[in-house]
Amino acid sequence: MVSRAVAIGAHAVALTGSTARDRRTSISDLDYHVVGQRPKVDDLPGDIDVYAGDPNHFWEIEMCDRDAAQSEVRAALTSAARGLLLEGGAFPLARSELPAQLRSLGHDRLASSLEATIHGEPPLTELERSLAALPPRRSGQNPSRDGKVIVT
Image 1: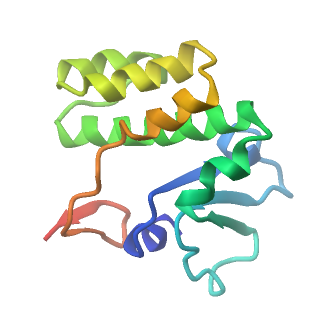
Image 2 (image 1 turned 90 degrees about the horizontal axis):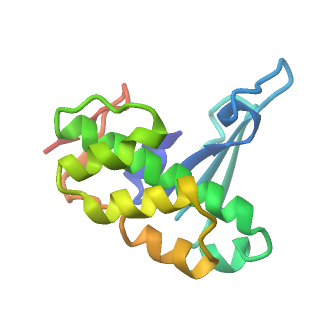
């Protein structure tokens, strides 16, 4: 599902719910939130729920739940951090250790934004600015079937 969303230009994809919190049960489903166009999922198992939203309206939807917005931003920043670290040849450590690892590779802005979502409770306006710390998707990147990125 993630590779499908990325292939059609999703700005962000986050796994949420019980599975993301490591509380999955026999009746749990997989909840994905896509910032961007909803990918085709009708051929996937029924326990996959995909919620999609227009990037321009992302913050309007989340305004009523600051904690949920922080959780979503932290998840997006964490995913980006882990990707950048792997790309830079560094094995990502625990979430709380990611900012220091990012700084060692020169990703100070992303490190500071992630740190703020880990150790603080930034206002929504700061959370929104944190998304600007996400690195832009480089053209020519396409996910392969195994989820790795292939640069063409």
